[in-house]
Image 1 (cartoon, rainbow, N blue to C red):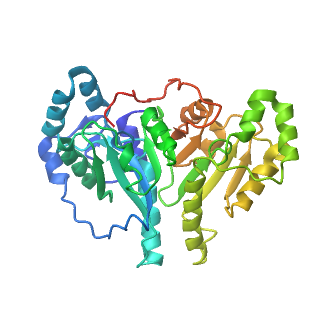
Image 2 (image 1 turned 30 degrees about the vertical axis):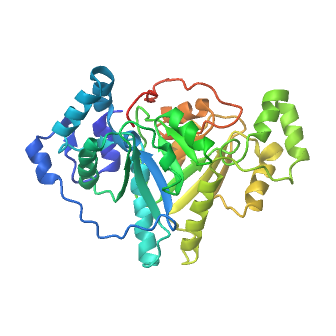
Length: 366
C-alpha cells in the first residue's frame, strides 16, 4: 500500500507528505505546532488504555531499513536529522483516530467523566527518537500524552503499570509475552491496500474461538474432526465457554456502549461490535451466543460463516480492526483491505506467512 493512499483514508486537509514525497524541512517546521492539549488526560485507573507500538501507529519502514542495514547509531542520527519530518500513518492510525472520535462524544455527554480511551505509545525506541514521534503526533493532531520509550529493552514489563487493556504491536514475540502476562494483545499487519473506514463510528470485529472464547471447542475439532465438534457443541450448548484473550476488551467496549445507550443513543452509538466466526449458526452458533449472554455482553452483529472466507464479509463491515487466531483468516482479511490482527493463542497456531502482508521482523525497533 502506498503512503499517499493511507493518507487519503485517514487524514484530511493538512497532509505534509503527499504522492509519496515529503515537503522540505522548512515547510514541515511551519506546519508542526507545539502540543497545547485542551483536553484532560484521564487517570489510568479510570480509562481504557490502548497501548500501541510506534511502528503500527506510524509508517517507519525506511527507518527500520536503516536500523537493520547500518545499525543503531546511524538509525538514531537519521531520526534526529529528520525529526521535523512527520511519519506517515501506519495500520493502527485509523483505529486510534476512531477512539478519539468516541472520546469526543463521551466528553460531550459526560463532561466530568474519565471513563475514556487513553492511547499510550509503547516503543523500545531510544529516547532520542522521541522528539520526532512527538512532532508527528502534533502534526496529525493526535491526543497522545503517555509515552514509554525503553531504549532497546522490551517494553512489555511496563504494560501492567500502564493498566493496559489492549496492546498492539508488529512484533509477535512481544505479543506472546503480553498474552503470557494476561494482557489482551495482537500482532497487527499492514495490508497492501486499505479499505476506507468510518470517521464517526468505531467498528471492531472479533473471531470467536481462541479470541473471545477459549480454544476448548477448537481442540475438539482438531483432535476428532467436524462431526465430533458439532456433537460436542450440541451436548454442551448450555455450558458457557471459558473466556479467551480478547474477552476483556469486548467487555470494556460494552461498558462504553451502555453509556451511550443511557443517553438514548443505542441506534446511533459510535461504537459497533461484530462477531465474525467460521462456526455454523444452526449446529454450533447457539453456544457462542449463550456464552456471550452468560457474560452479560452484547454483540451488535453476529455473522456465522460456516467455513466461508471472512474477507468479503469484512470488506462490507469495514472495521477499523479485526482480531483472529488463525493466520489464514488474517491473510484473507488483509487481502481485502482490512487491518487485521493475529491473536497467537490456542491450538491453531502456526508461523505467520507473508502472502503480501508487511509483517515485521522480530529484531526490529518497535
